[in-house]
Image 1: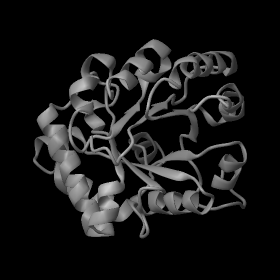
Image 2: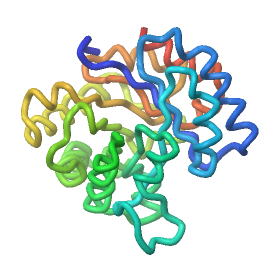
Image 3: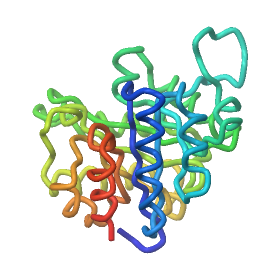
Length: 251
């Protein structure tokens, strides 16, 4: 990792925990987070954002959402807007996670609209990209991720408003992890795609984090790669000990 890109370790709790266990986990992470010279982010289910936010408000931990709507308000039953997220203390939101793209049929254009809406509310967007198992095995992984980057990242992306999360879809929750060579190749390619979109200077500042069966026992070699600037962690973020161990791998 380059010194001008501060590592980001983000926990995506997905649809897990309850109000008590979410608060307990946040407190456990907060008790150790201040010793790290990096950014630690917790993304609980939206219904627990306020409670988790209060649990971490005296620590250096950042609060984030797992998704947002592309509009600031309106008749969108069940959705949550970026200004609402900002109101409860969110500094980040994940957009375009593969589970949202698949389960809710979210297109690149929808993802871009969400990212831009988050920016307008002062929230950094973590834009997720990644290829399927079929795309990887057929040699189409780079083309797939290139298309997602070029269509999901809005004009005006920079280091302050955007993080890219590369999550090979076939690795999420499967226990499979790409080799360090494969991750280095993809992260380097993503950096190149960003240069095409936003220019050399902005592209060099944008953090690209890795996700997909990231655990304490495989994190260190991945975090050491030049274009890997942290991790987006799913299941392993539900245990404070495991999550903190991944953060330690960045040191």
